[in-house]
Length: 144
Ligand code: FES
Image: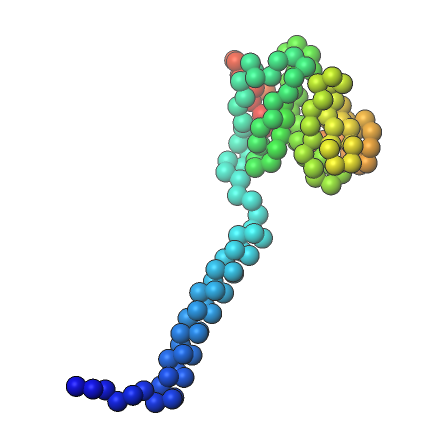
């Protein structure tokens, strides 16, 4: 039993359907990627606290961690005093580094300098680093 060959119109319709399906899948993949790229960062536990063990932050040292999806740092400038700061430079958003020898933060992008309470010491940053509330809970530091 043989079938009649497809007419040119049937072939065109078939190709149009296949191309439309491929186009729809491609648009969906690109659209979803663009949507995910432009969507705000999901911050699980927005407003929640981060717990850091005190033993990780010796006097004069720092501990970097993520706070609400962004880099942050906690330090102990003096015994029993803890300071939590955003680790995002207020100039153009680079991540600051801790310089143990000078006990200050240095931004590697344009040499912005911040003190151990986040204040600007030099360079182009227009304002101090953001600070986060700190409370102590036994052997832990609660940030946020
Ligand atoms: S981004 Fe930090 S000094 Fe420019």
